Image 1 (cartoon, rainbow, N blue to C red):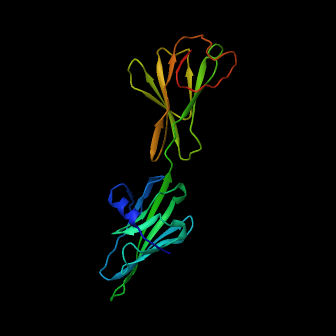
Image 2: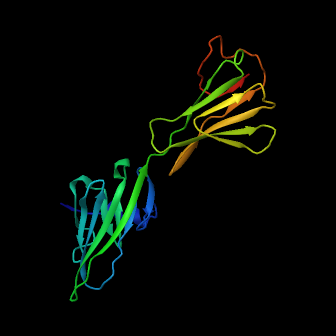
Image 3: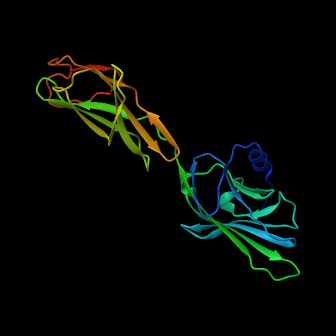
Length: 236
């Protein structure tokens, strides 16, 4: 089918798009427009083919230099999402499923025989990380420690760590992983704890958890293990 590229052309010129580079990995956020440069070397006529190589192989867009810039042949699955303008191919509103390896092929049709040019791009698309949800497990009246837990919704490629900040001012401490065990017997000062979740395109921080050193308080009730949303101060 033939598709006009008005919207893609305007978005690309506005500077909002993410520009890829050949032979590198580009990390993109869902909803972004990603641009793939066309590296043309010649003076005669040519055609451009933008294709997906992996995980499956098929042509996405084909354009001939003797055609108007905003008219090209595009795969039905990419209707209204792909376009060509100037020396760029633009893929609009990228999804996680757009992760893969892409290629731009340029075939030349001049007086002299010339091999085609090929540029390969690797793109990985991620959703922004949602705010972490935190909880506390343990009973201060019967156990020497409590456990802070952290989780995010069903997102992939997410790294989680805890940050411990003393209210008296010393530098913060970082603990990798979703779980942080606090030995409240040896705690000597009040701290604020934050869970931080990140992926290649974003990071978010949980609401702070403040721990006060009032040992023996039964704020967790009589059960051995309880789970609470950690959005306020907990007294040990």
